[in-house]
Image (cartoon, rainbow, N blue to C red; front, side, top):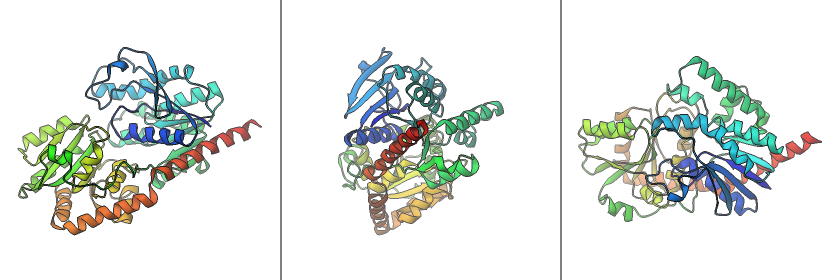
Length: 414
């Protein structure tokens, strides 16, 4: 089948969203499907942008059997404003890509941005193709929870857009049962349209490895008990509270908090570390995809924080990566939901209440005092993802959804 994928994030950008969608498209192409992607010129989480992406309105390239059409980002100021406005302005801008790609059998769209669903609707009408709306974060609810969206008129506008997109989509894919229940019970989406298609982890790319690797040697981690966070330090993570937990670990000179990545809250996190005069917190920039497995392997425990005002069901994909690496998970997040359920079922780590630095420090110390229990939690996690969250099994689910959407469209046209 001919599949067109729409996403704002795609390699060489670094981050979960970019790599997750790339792996989906790459695997579908390897399974014999003709896959095209409409995406943006890369800029997010990159210290330097390849010159071939600069100063162009469009660019066509091939990546791992995928036809990629890139559209220039709308001209916006740098920083947080560019990120926020891009969520609103980029989707209609992407409609330009519809005149470049070939006619698909089915359209697969990644959200956020929420309004990318409007792009899928437009292109679906243009080509007479159904579209599947893959919901990774529940917008606008997550922005409301975080206090980023408070204007009642804007909330009504985005909730109206959300409801419209759900109505127009042939199928809606969510990554957990909690997200499915939220859509059907809170948003009133018909259950017949919602499918659970879990995210996955590449268990071949990320696997248990030696703790004293090149990354550990390069950053002087030998002999240290490393509690790491690796990823985007965005508004959802509450990364400042992770830094603050360093105050409760200062009596243990061998423990280091390693924070790897970038994002809008990194500056505040670094300022907090300086203000508290913490010497056990180390910051590093976002690492290339091929280095990420070494970051996990160099760790004893890996942290997954979320802010306490996140009320929508969330399963941070980094949890699966940590489990694949055979490292213990220490999660500081709302204790009701899919993520704590996975951690408890897999027996792969500890969960503590969100934005509680002292509780987070105590969880780290629990594993610090129990090396055998720490190792066992990591081994449990590896076994669990191999059984439930392999890349091939989860992508096969998306492949089936594409076929289902096509079959529905054919029946509707008869």
